[in-house]
Length: 316
Length: 276
Image 1 (cartoon, each protein chain N blue to C red):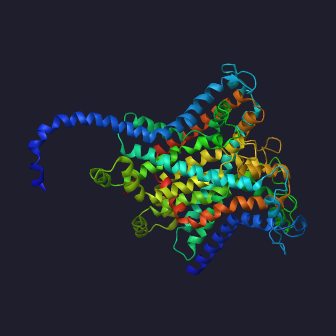
Image 2 (tube, each protein chain N blue to C red):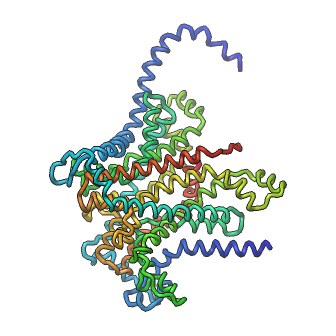
């Protein structure tokens, strides 16, 4: 409505100066309001997230058992770490855990998402059943799976016994304990991961598939030429978050093996917990925490670079 | 051909779904057996007649050093406190980030996002030391403080949502003389019910699952939550699986109920958090 615009033009000239002054006062007041809104959360983030990161870096330069006064040792904790076979064993165990968990979980989740991305009767119920493990409290499920893996009367060995298989000591054997905990990791993560892929699949426009079918592409070709490339953003998100998550596995290991037998399942997070809160070697534990942090940053950065290098598709 | 394909599909998915649900069946069956029945029946069969003895034992305080009902109550309380804190503080902060102009906004927002990269265990040692310094070890303040002010993740999620709302609505409210807080509570929040629901569910699940921090900071029966309670039950009872499964059932069931009630919102929460 152009008529309305002409009308206040004259009055505007007189009003401009005071408005500008009021504008500055208002901007200050707006900023204050914003900081009042932000205040509690800012306090929480500074005090309980950012300050701890600084503190842990500082403590890693000290020798401290929490009882005597902390003693500055420079980089001694890091030098000790470099030559500590237990630490590198722990890193290796963690890496193996991630390698056993993530590929299995991701592929299974993708297959499930493809299977569940149909409109069959009862499909919603099935989808829901697959997500239920995600609601299971990890430490409690660790206890439950420990019972399932039990050599006496445990469900798994009893079931295998029906086929004449001798009881297998899943959690008590150095070779099987880690794969068994990894299997529990897959069990709890697969359904949740599937939901992301399902959301990704439903975002792929149907005409792309129709065009491909007209060009004579079969289901396998369609999967590799359309589905997989267009799921790239989902794949990126899923891999980054699930690698970060499984690299920090703790609860299920705590309930199932306590790092054992021996040190067969002593993942990095568990070693840090033990060093800090059972051995009270907090300076060294802080250095280990810094190592975990650094490893995760490198891993995440590597994934960011890998996914950035590849082409992304804009079909919107 | 089609029916064959569908049958195979149903069988494969059915087996998968059974594997997902099977541990829950084990919990239920085992918790309803006596010690003798545990040895006499197959693990995957229910005992007849069942017994509620494990549950009464768990709740009448007859197990030394384990106050299970208190742990359960503490977890409920923790979930409520964290959810209220998350809803209030996260909403305020996210609204500031989404709609207000103030110096330092971009820097602060990126600092918030950067904290998403910080692994849990990295903050545990300093957090414990902070709590020790101010005398909050084994207190509710210590248990709750690190999480009650809302999470950067929640703020990120809410900010994204607020930015999708049309700005005209707020402008209209402001012209009608509503203050910032009134605009937020009367105009914005009623439109944000779905995302607030999502945020609540994510927080309840987080609080319910939380184990490492409670394990570190709590030691007495006045503060222990159910996850730590299950761990101490395991430490005290070793292989008394009847009792352990009764405890597990009690710890698992509330979230299953939450899931059944809010399934849609939970699935939507995934779509919201994943595609950004």
